[in-house]
Every structure is written in structure tokens, then in C-alpha cells.
Image 1: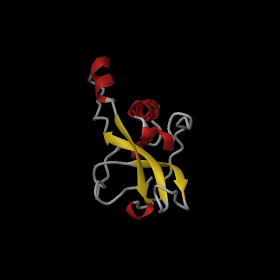
Image 2 (image 1 turned 60 degrees about the vertical axis):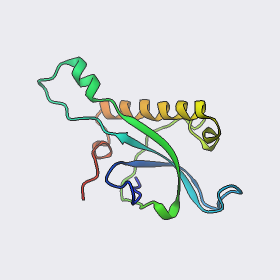
Image 3 (image 1 turned 180 degrees about the vertical axis):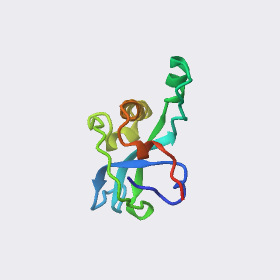
Amino acid sequence: GAAPGRAAARDRRAVLQNIDDGTSDRPYSHALVAGIDRYPRKVTAAMGKKKIAKRSKIKSFVKVYNYNHLMPTRYSVDIPLDKTVVNKDVFRDPALKRKARREAKVKFEERYKTGKNKWFFQKLRF
């Protein structure tokens, strides 16, 4: 997990791909991260199926971050995002980027429903 300063309280990220040496267009070491923009809301036993489904929805994002803006944390997540869908090339094409975001969203929601990595789906508390 990594929490960058500016949006630290807002969301969680999982680093997907590290680019240590930098590239020609980004001459610094950076990482491709996927994270959560909007968290699933609290669900209680009294709620109906439809309401639970609605509250379990997650909004995700995919972004490239400079290492300087990432704060490594002691957590790690092993969410298997499809590397063919989520990679550096998506940033050239909005349609691909949408697809990548959807992929992240689906995987996050699956993981949330199975109840694994509970901490990943809660807002950061300081």
C-alpha cells in the first residue's frame, strides 16, 4: 500500500508496477498505482440485498506517481490485476484507461466481497 501526501486521507493505493530508472517521457523513478476513490459504505445485517449491493460499490482509479510522492506502508495486497489491461499504455487512450479502471474496480469489489484485506477498504485514519 502507498499513501501519497496530498490525498492521503482520501484513498488507498496498490502499486502495480515499479519503473525504477525512469523513462524518456518521465525522467524519474515512478510507479503505476491503482487505488480507491470512493469507498464501500458500511453494511449491516438489517439491510436488504439490493441495498448491500449498492453500498458495496467502489470507485477506482489508475495513476502514475513519482516515488517522491509515495509513502510506503507496511501493508501489501496481492490483488491480481490483469497486466494486459492495466499498464503504462492505457494513459494514451481514454477508452483503454476506462477499461483499466473498470478492471481495477471489478477486482477490488470481488476482493471486498470475499472479505479479504479488510484494511484496504477502509479510509486511512490518522
